[in-house]
Length: 149
Image (cartoon, rainbow, N blue to C red; front, side):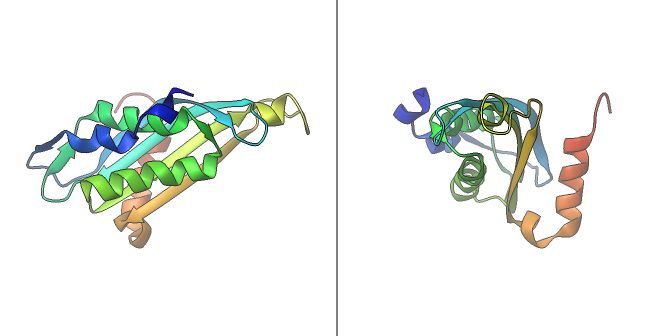
C-alpha cells in the first residue's frame, strides 16, 4: 500500500521536448493492487498509450511509475484505469490517452464464485482515442501484438 504516500502525477513532471507526435505505447507493465472491497490482491498487466502534443514526452519509466503509484493502494480496477488515464491527460496534455488493464482478482479465485484464471479487462480513453476509431484501433492492435515486430 506504498502508493498511499505518493502523488503519482508528480512522476510526470519530468518531460522532454522531442519532435514526436505519434503513438507512444508501453505495454505489459506488471500491475499489483488490493481490492478495497475484499482486501485481497489483484494482479495483471497495464498497457498505456498516448500521443504527445507539440512533442512533449515523458520518460517511459515514468508511465510505469504512475501505474505503480495508483495501484499500490486499496483500489477497484475501474477507478484505477481512469486515474492513470486522467493523470497522464491532465499532466502531459497529449492529443489522447488510452489505458487498458487486464487483471486476475483473488476475490474471484479464493472466495465467491471460485473461478481461477478469470481476467477482468478495463479501458479508459481520453482525447483522440475516444473520438477517433482509427487511433483507438492502432493502439489496440499494438497491445494485442505478440512477439517481435
